[in-house]
Structure formats: C-alpha cells, structure tokens
Image 1 (cartoon, rainbow, N blue to C red):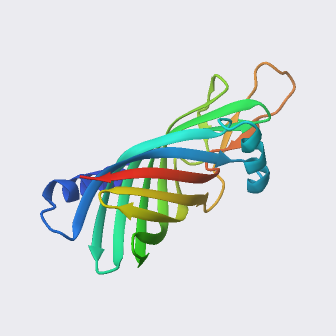
Image 2: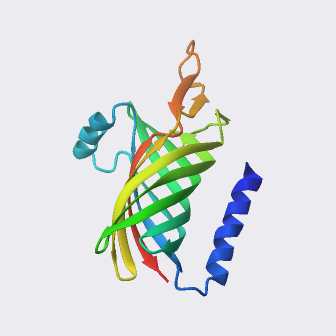
Length: 197
C-alpha cells in the first residue's frame, strides 16, 4: 500500500511539473475538517455547543484536468483530525488522496464525487499512542460542490468511509477493563479554500 501511495504522489507531482497545457491546472489548498462520531446529526448539535470539539485541518496540492464541462481532480493532502469520545480526544495524522470526477453545472458552480484513499501516519488517544489499528490504509468516498472565482475556489464536501477502521487501545489507568475501540475513519464535513497557480 505504501508503494501505491508513493506512486500516486509521484504521478501528482509529475502532472504539476510537466503541465504546459490549458487543460491542466495545478494548485494548493487548505481548509477545515469536522469529524463526526456515531450519529452525524447528533454530532452537529454537539459541535454547535462546542465549535472546536471535533475540528481539524488539511493542506495539500491538487491537479485539475478538464475536458469541456467534465474534469478529473486528484488531490494529495496532509490531514490532522480530532474526535471527541465521551470527553477523551482521539487525534489522527494522515495522508488523504481523493480522486474526484466533477462536472460544471452553471457559471462557477460545480459538483464532484469520487473515492478517497487514506493512509494513517500517527494516532493518539488522550496521550496514549495507538499501535493496533485495523488498517493503516482505507478507502472512502467524497461528494460535494464548489464555486470557482477565477484562481480562487471554495468547496464543501462530505466524506464517509466504506467501512469502519477500528483502532484498539488498553486504558492502563482503569484495571479489569478489556480493550477499547474507536473509529479511525469517522464521517467528515470538509471545507476547503484552493488557489490555482
């Protein structure tokens, strides 16, 4: 899986380095990630009461290859998320690589969807490093919409894993408890600002 991810990184950098065509754009992007645990709408209510509870961020590169109204947009991002599990914080550092197909609807508005590959770099649950993650590599899906205003773009998307990716840890502060589990691939609402170079 690491070899696949490195190949994808090389391909994205190659597209960026050798793009001399009007059909290919490259750029940088950054934004906020909101992770949800359990019921998504219940998590939104919790976020309204405590806005930075499950807030994270991302930054990275994208390439956009367009033919007429349809485009292909591979992205590579470093993402840092945090989730709240009954008052305990679960932090994840990861590489995300969405491979999106989009269509321009009207004017600057476009919609997109596609798979999103995730490779976990590091996890921590309230000071406890977690070594036992079901899969370092997982696949999910992105669906969203955006607006392009010249070189500046804004988009909002929903991300969901195709299945849960559990991380297991043992709480050494409480005796006679079995291992606890948290989801390393929670649902996310992602807001991004992008700049075409």
